[in-house]
Figure 1 (cartoon, one colour):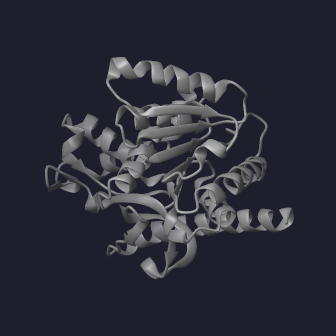
Figure 2: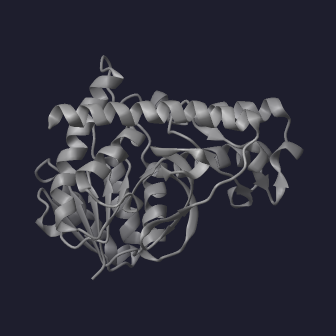
Length: 314
């Protein structure tokens, strides 16, 4: 029986579980959270939705990990959101402890699972999950580039008044200010974006993409995005469960690709039943490579900080 576990029953995790159920990507979805009653109540609510939406995905809510045993995919969403007065270092330390503790419990029960990380800071938390699970790196990767690319595509579609389905793009690099949208590789109905839009307008869209998460936080005031992030994680899980060989921008562990290694970086990734089937390299011009390198520095810093924290916890 196919099974997907979602760790964290907050907005991202619960919405992720709902999407998995409605798309019937697995026969069972297990929602795990430390808060007593929250995963149970949300899972029950989703199961009571099944007759209306017409899915048979069995929903399980739990505060433990026994029910997660034998999962095909584990989606890690748990973690604290940054609050006023909290430094980035505070967030990194707290979420390192959360991700480490959760994955150390979940991974031994599902030794063949593919692990998708959504928790932030993304690059660092994916590294923590790799070390905590002791899985091969091809089975541990992070969600960020799909979300950033979706935002980029949606803004282009708005600007040109076209269907989002006809906008093809790829955003590389880390999740944040150093992400690397690539207008030269962006097409609308097969037409290169620079042929349809002036450079200044493209740059404004690129900047809005970089600020996409912050823009939503500004509106919500007490929360952050979860509809698009959950959809992005489910797209990755779907490619694993159905062996689709999708090419998606994911935070993958580099082993020489793009001339780099030993770092999690957002790159074009083919996802199949085994996880990362391969990373596709693409030629970058001088300005694109400069942006890529700047993002690489930020990703390496994040991974190094997480590594230091893990060493201090040992």
